[in-house]
Image (tube, rainbow, N blue to C red; front, side):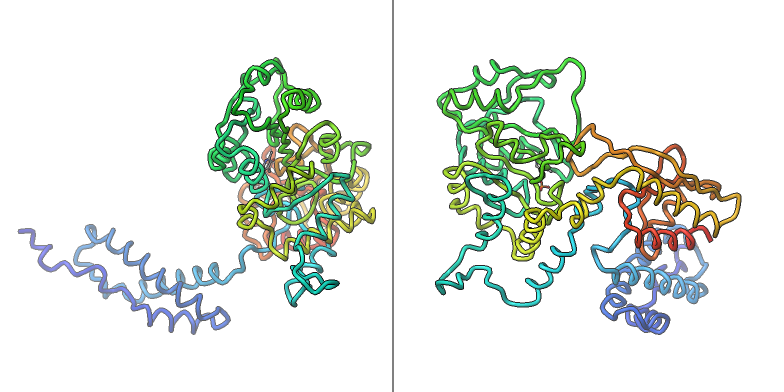
Length: 474
Ligand SMILES: *Cc1c(COP(=O)(O)O)cnc(C)c1O
């Protein structure tokens, strides 16, 4: 028998108790909430136990007792770090210096002040959400937003669900359950966050009939696939990629003509849509949702928190008969928008109706800010940074382009101005420090440089970025 084995101490003996750890950690950082310290202490002891057990084989007569102080110190530090992370609110506010206006990982569209105020008002008190104040009876929770959507779009009817994936699911379930839906192979897309068109169709109990090839789909492909089981023709916007080269696609007007001849509805999943025509400002006309109805779609659906600049929501516009059937589908109850979302959407739509979208809706304001204004703001920020940070640090302005993001305008890049930070060592390391700053800053990394893009930063946010950079460069 190995003599060492007989005297080998249990490596877990030096493990502090959870209670002891809670006492030590609370004493060291009284500002941390109790619940977080307690949860963190349990986690820290568990982690330490695992660590000591893993080392167990290697541990010899070096008794755990000798290292007691050490182990406790490490456990307290680990516990405090964990408690701090636990105590942080989620989601946390961050500064978006990436220039990507609709950044899915950063929560897509920030709301306008008016929309945020409407959310607060709806959150803090009772409302007439489902009450008809005239008649004293039950009201329709979507009446207000549906009316504004009709006014903005000219659509016969409007419905809203909790997001666009839900809106599409609702249309498919309503019109095509147990029947066939025809889609081009070039449009069977996956959008970030695991939204895949074929999977949604499967979930809706719809049989997917793929037509054409990845790169080319022709009118005959749709025509030949139409049969007695066909319920509708679906067009899906390629939100996050572009096809170039030897490609062919059946445009919406042509598809609508095929649908009309066959007596089949055409559904257009636009993904990202606006309710103001921004084609004279460089935004493609296809993004204007009403233009899709004019082009022949019977129903169009799109997200509330992409180019529209409102809350997460799925907006359905189109023929009265179809939209009404969607609204009456029992599934609509499971997919409905909550009152805070309704309040935010209503305020966003009101702002658009009143023609204040560009000034007040952050997504539109950022998207439409002139390049000259971005340049001026970039020069100002670079100048201030250079004054506070001498060489070898350098802050240079440069013209760049950035995608709009959020699955909205693929292949469409906006000109923008950035401040490039160099001379601070590794750009990746600086970016990591900025991510962990008191107010996290997300910047762009390109060509080995850290770049602060002004398009997604308001003036007051620039001042904050400056402070976070000051701390990160210290
Ligand atoms: C973004 C997108 C969706 C999903 O919309 P959500 O509002 O995120 O659910 C669906 N279809 C297309 C084409 C999209 O671009």
